[in-house]
Image 1 (cartoon, rainbow, N blue to C red):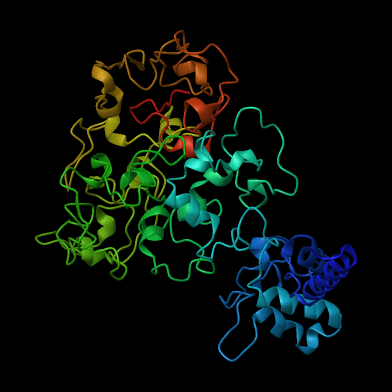
Image 2 (image 1 turned 180 degrees about the vertical axis):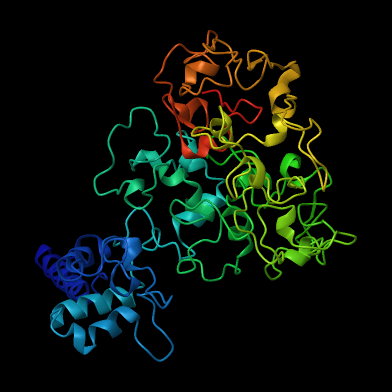
Length: 506
């Protein structure tokens, strides 16, 4: 047995060596939180913040700091034989004196450690970096997003973080130091926003931010379909080609690891099909006798002749404006493409544009009675002329003859098996789907009554029971975000009075 004094000496020497080893250990790399963040706020925010930051680089958030500059290069990643753009900018003469030598060394150490948000702890240091294989986005995808949606999951985000969709019972406050999900996911839907996974910010459709996902394939076709263009005044809804969730949360075929293409036949056509091996569409809007009836997703942009010949085979020769009021004279462009690719051929009356006789230039509807309210409504899509009139085709004249405004209600007016009628003596419509909703105060409007209509004119506000009897209805819950109380949102305007009731039960 050792003497106690020898044991104490041995312990003391061992402790000294341990302290020496501890002092020689490499210090932890600096992190964005608490160190780099305050430095950038103090030195860079004056120029690098807001909607148009200098050089395209924003220093007002972590994602902005690790994001791209105006050249498309990530600000914090080294380039071939060159330092990261952030350090290169600080070495330029126009940034002389912006940071001290110690601050420059701190930034260099942070960049050398791959710009972590935090110094680690519960999660890997790169958990918040969308570019990293260790990012929380990849982790959540591998688990089917259960930690976001299931409060009983072993890795439930809400156990520590605020701003998540669901939190475990009894968890009221975020863990100390745990950032809220909304500190990065700043759209109204938070982390469940469509742009979080396959868009960017408030934009729901791909491509994602190439700064964070540089390996993603170039994607121009989504924008060509989903955004306004030279051929469509309004973009197509995502539901035209994909099953779209009502709540935004990953469920069912949504976020199942596959890109599911399910066509809305009402828009794409009943023959529409998608070949996943070629990524090509057949029998859709594009198959109208042109050169590329089955375009593949990665092919170059379409032209007029790709979908239909300009002019089509056996088509009468002459100026396109003689029959089509949205085309220019030689058919090389569209002027007001509100009707283009709507599933039918829209023609004038054979003597020029429709507006030549009963409209105003490019606007084909007359300025009498309630035409304006139907053709350019404030709370719904425009009503097609053929809903109320027999529209001539080709060089035909109007079938009702001279001086008569023939009315024959069809299409949307008779939706749901209704038998709409028009009384020419009183100029009154009755039995229409559009106006005769449950609880309507003006179910049979008179054509000459041009006083503004309200929600209650066509259906109760709220409708009678079993509809909830509240005007603060919370449209995001029941009507998929298409209403805000008794106000139609811009998204709702595109679907309001379209023949179906859009609802999702809470």
